[in-house]
Amino acid sequence: MESKVLTMLVPMATEGLKVTLGVFALTLIMSLPLAIVVAKLRMSKNKIISKITGIYIYIMRGTPLLLQLMFIFFGYYRVPLIGYPFSRGQAIVIAFVLNYTAYFAEIFRGGINSIDIGQHEASLVLGLSKTHTFMKIILPQVIKNVMPSIGNEVITLVKDTSLVYILGSSDILKAARSVSNVYAAFSPYIYIGLVYLVIIAILTKVLDKIENRYDYYR
Amino acid sequence: MVLTVENLSKSFGKSMVFHDISFSVNKGEIVCIRGKSGEGKTTLLRCLTSLETPDKGSIKINNMYLCREENSQIKYAQKGELQAIRQEIGLVFQDFNLFPHMSVMENLMEAPVFLKNDSPDNIRKRALELLKSLELEGKEDSYPFQLSGGQQQRVAIARACMLNPSVLCFDEPTSALDEQTRGQISKIIRYLSSEGISIIIVTHDNAFADEIAQRIITMKDGKITIQEQ
Image 1 (tube, chains in turn green, red):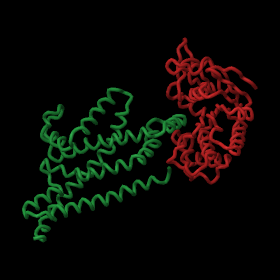
Image 2 (image 1 turned 135 degrees about the horizontal axis):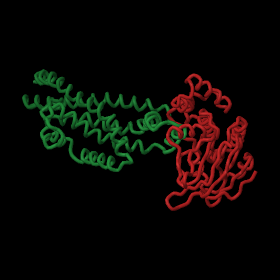
Image 3 (image 1 turned 90 degrees about the vertical axis):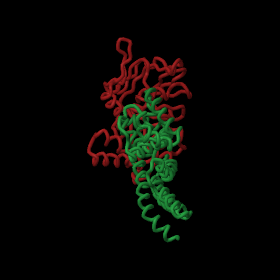
Image 4 (image 1 turned 45 degrees about the vertical axis):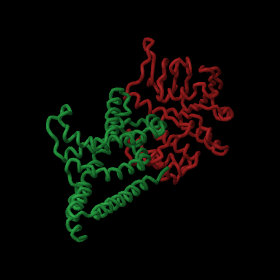
């Protein structure tokens, strides 16, 4: 029985892993840089820009990701300016990126605010430009400060990828459910639980490494 | 005159910080501005270093105007000019504001390399010379947190000197120092002045002002009350 379960689960889970890791990687690669831009817009002196960004963050953090996935895939025609339906993959990536950008942006905003005003003033007196000051003086210090919070979100993201089932995409959890249904067995869920734990263990190591890289100064 | 300040005034909202301040500084002169906390000394220094914009009056540094009165309207220097003026006047902050994620050498090289004042090799050479003259030899790869308060202050001085300023301002330079390092900072300030750099020191430390200043300006209630040689 157990060997039958595994024979069915392994190929399905391998395919599902591609979806899980794909959504995870694409979301991270796109939302992290975007979040820095959104954080800057949120902190803009222009009240309209800051307000609009604030509303975007409010909506993304105020509604479930599951709802956002459904809205972008099924409810596209309700969104102005978008005239064509998104493919399943597009909808998934857009929803995840929009959602995670909002969370990351708030983390970055806190990080940017935590940098002493003296760092900006010293840069100004030395004649550094605003862009150079942000990229070379402020941002490296922000990254060190926000790494623990970013790490938390990154780990949540891995588990959130299981929400793609709502649009009919097959990730590793969906693979477990399918096999469980066929053999009326619970063990596929245990195996997939272990897969999540392995992914999180690797990520934790990587995140620790990155945090340690910033340990050279205080 | 390296620096001339005329009829300078500054208010934050309705509260006046200082009013109608005029003074000038000669090449290599050491001038102390003293007064109690809240008399507007630091704000004056921040106006000189373009961290604040005054409401009235003029500031002239080496024939360039940071701000001036024109038809009773104040006019500030434009971007390009401002960049040039900023290189003429340096500031050593009270808490130094070194970049904590950069080594001493990187702290020193950041601005001149960005401003393309010279080739990176020459900038590096100049940084090493400065570190040597400020008794920081061998510290170029250290990070600010690895240095003592006095050493950090000297790095901040070196960083400001990297742009070859005509005027160097100090905000409360003795506030974080013990007796011994205080002696050291006096020595360094005298050395910089002998190199032709004009020094403006804002302090409420009367003993230090008496010891180092060639001229003392006393501020009270936002006005200059005494100028003594």
